[in-house]
Length: 383
Image 1 (cartoon, rainbow, N blue to C red):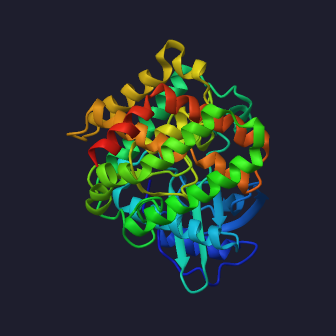
Image 2: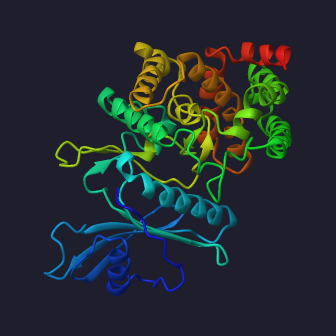
């Protein structure tokens, strides 16, 4: 991944012009001679940004290895999307300083965020012609989101390498690349706890008798334990950055791009860093393994534990020290306790029952399987 360039967001033409792209690619250091002579645009269906696929034509004197296919992404005007765009630009601009350690990122050729206007943009290499998600969002929701083992291994390796490169990075918690808003400090945690509590009450009323007694009890137990988990396991780590790394923030399997069989590029990529923040390393693993995998899918051939151990081996292999299996399991259980309330928020925000219900059931079963109630009880005793 080559360095991304910080450029003003004002003056970005719509549609994009060959002149603007020529200037941007020159600023990136890639287009050393020649120019872009033509650009064709194709819309992308993403709901969380204004994104376009670009096909570029260059003058004959341009370097022969210039990319013909690029991906241009700009935030939409909603307040949450403005914040998300700022986070993603901040992520790529820090990533540009460590490009040799981030082969799982598509090359970024330019990025900018204008705080006054609330505008952001990214210009990335488009790998959609040679890569595809290991599973689609629809497959995940339908319960058929188990890709082949070789793709799962590549996904875990890519994520571990990303986490290792960002391990305890000094940029985490600065600028627009903040630590998780759930618990970055006492005020954020208290606000999160109030929101979780209010949402849980409203959700139980909405779900009515369809919500089992066991799930109600599980949510009540998690809410009661969160203040103690914060005090015992999180407060100091959030303040010091100890054993924190970058979190994708929405790390479903559908966010990865794996090479097609005929692709000359064999890298596995991770895309869409709008939710990037500092967090527990296990948070992304919970999104991968617990949000839409059933107990049977997690336990088959010890799939979940096997992949977690492969992740830890890769993390260690990429230079992280002092982080053990027990540490990973602790963080996974804490991440489960917080993520349990994610489908509750989904439901209250208007997501369909076909989406939030399987997600809630999968997370509840993972909370039980990983004996999180024991964690809750011990945290309450020891705090």
